[in-house]
Image (cartoon, rainbow, N blue to C red; front, side):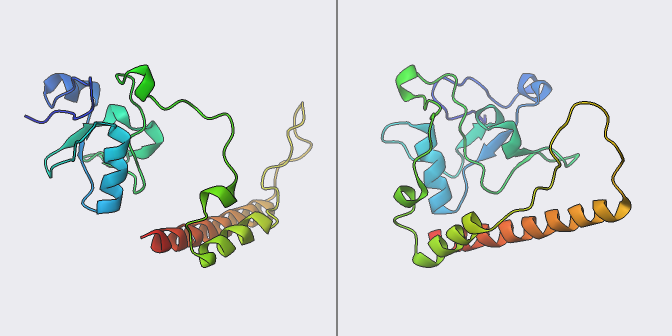
Length: 171
């Protein structure tokens, strides 16, 4: 029987779980991604087998792709992060501040650091006008909408390029 490997989780693959929309996901085959999942589970001296599964309740909703009618899948970089059954000392609290990028990325190659600094230095135009109370004075024209759409697509492509650079250098 398929069960969730997370400490304290009693979900198993049955009619009850299926009716609640709970899905089960095997650990990734990629060793580095698998290690991220194993660390997130926080079980002492434990390694996942090829049959180990985690239920969808341990993933944020934005990590789950429910667009397919037949299959529920996890997004590419999804890592389990929701563990309500863990004891308090094993739960990761929300950080109020993020550490600076330089401290985090000291192990990254200089090409990745350069790419990240270019993104930080790049001036990103405001895509959404500031909110003002009351109705707008005029609606957007078709050319303004097309321009915004083009800018969004450009920024998405650049973001994807940087993600690929970071992923390829981290492996």
